[in-house]
Length: 210
Image (tube, rainbow, N blue to C red):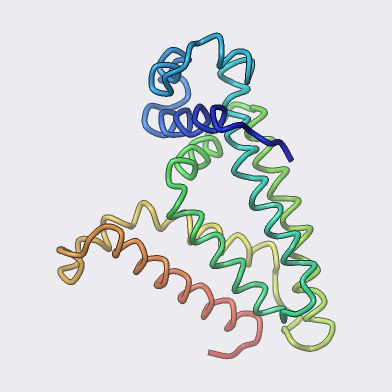
């Protein structure tokens, strides 16, 4: 796993915010340098190019998820449903805490042009599926989970639901009961609501318990 200095992380976070706000092509290296209060030569020295900087943003965010899932799979003290619940909590928190990154990720996945970043996204998804599959398969073999479960679609349901929360956030926020709720309080409420919904859905699909 790559280790970044405080200065490098500062550049990464500024780039991430600007890529989310203005798009990759709408953001220049000069914009990033000015916002991060560094010179352009430093960005070139650390990352090489704007394209490589975007890749670095993705690798930084994705490595944390990879480590979490690997540790989860190797945990012998948790049951299969507990592991999936932990996975749900992890990705719901990532969505709401890393909104700039999610914005970039959604845009890159919709981009028709092939790119190293798109390859990174799909490589990670394949890797995560390979790590998560044994959790479900083992539980199916010992009778904990039903066998008629499409794991690929189950995980697509997880990520699809989470990724749709952001577009729906303003709609949910418009409900009268949330009109005066502070933003940080609403964010926590949304985490709990989405997480609880997904856990109930997973339990129903995997165990037929409602």
